[in-house]
Image (cartoon, rainbow, N blue to C red; front, side):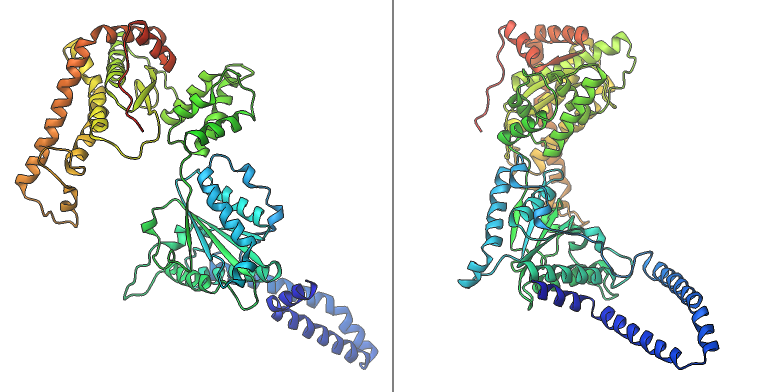
Length: 543
């Protein structure tokens, strides 16, 4: 081990070794020369030597600084920051990775391949070269990479893709070479090493070949491709590259994600129901909370939330409880935190009594239509408190993760969006500008049903493809037909939801009064009012 370290030191600092040796030889010759000089001249040389040496050092430092500043925009040549971390020093294990059940299973398999690299070579196999972690931001890709390094027990080099981006040609490529040189040396000593490149899309985007020359980012990517091809270096040892990105896979260069470079793609997706419940339990355990809080209920309310979102919600609820001078977190604090994160701060606008009543009937229209008509979503909260640019809100979430959307679900979304407008129209025989965003949402769904999803009678296909490329391949008659079918869906939804609200107008009035009295209604309160009046919700569509 000591000989290997000395050899690596010599290879890495060969130039400095010979410079130091040459300096010692010159000093020795100077001492011998002074011994043969006249005493007066020898004393004169010795007396001025420290000052001359100091002047030379200062001048060298100033010259080097300005050269680096001018040529490399302040960067110290092609050097990289010290990013080496021993695997045992990474204080993140798989036990600390919460809410990523599926991703952890694949990561554990990667760790076993790194640990058993010798056996794999004996049977003629090869250790994987690279792992590409893909998923939305805040899902724990960096955390999982650290856990892999800790469990594998190998050195870990953490970098960001932006650290290889430089305006001057060749600097980024030189930094890539330096990083892989360090990793190869560590792999030679320890048997393996991991390079983690976060936001790899900064240097891994698809190259654009031009007759006028390539960009610096293309040069850096080319060097990365070459370096990843030579990971099993002649010194011995394996270098595994872990890249993380939240960009779409199509944005990365095909040469980067081919087998032999990034051999595996690890999807780090948003947590499922059980994972979200585990995350809530974990973050709640770090604070004082009311024991009556049901983590499962919170998990159902946080559909599509990432681990970072859930952590932020719990932290925000602690701040809300502190501002309200409470020692423990209550459910209403977490509910308020979700609204604050998703919808923004309360703005406390001073509405006139008529405006406030109009908002109450508008939101009640959404609430009643959602409860009766929507096959997949629950009403978690209705509020007429002003937040951001909204005067009120009906907060709803799917009862479970659904990856396919049916025509019934999309049509129900349109009816719910139009219900606020219809409710105002029934109550006041007029409408307000508050329906603008609802119309945008309804028209977006109706347009997608007709133009993209083939959900209109007699129309099959994705017609948006005929509009691409800057030149339309669709006749004006076909455009008119598609727009007419879109309008038919909107008119049908408006007719059906108006019939529903007129039939259930008593419930609309009941909830409008409740909102005017309390400003907010939570899930349990909404359910209790409906049950009190003997009403049942829409049938749940099987998952």
